[in-house]
Image 1 (spheres, helix red, strand yellow):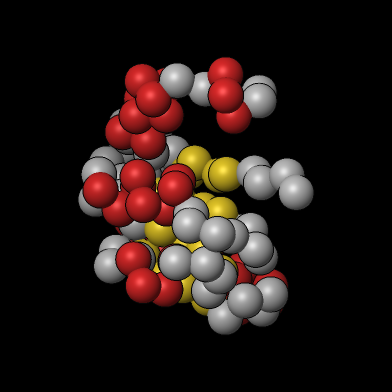
Image 2: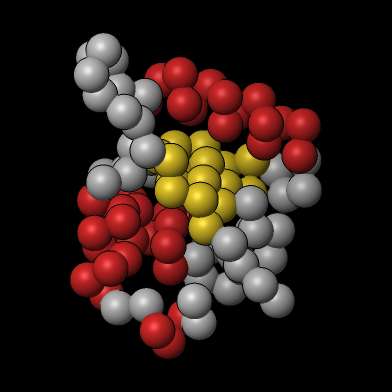
Length: 99
């Protein structure tokens, strides 16, 4: 989907059903998806790029382009935040950025 085709309602619906937001973008100006997830209290795993380090309060910011550490922190975040009930499915919302 082109970003202009995604409504605010769709974004809110996707985020509000997410357990964790993951973005592997190594370049970011502002990081809107991270800000929206944080506003909803959803933990984030992201690289230290753009405004991420300043704004992420719940989740983890990994040194930029440290893919090994990113994998470790993603696994840790999932273990910490995944639903605990047998009948609950966790949902990770991955963002994709095209430059």
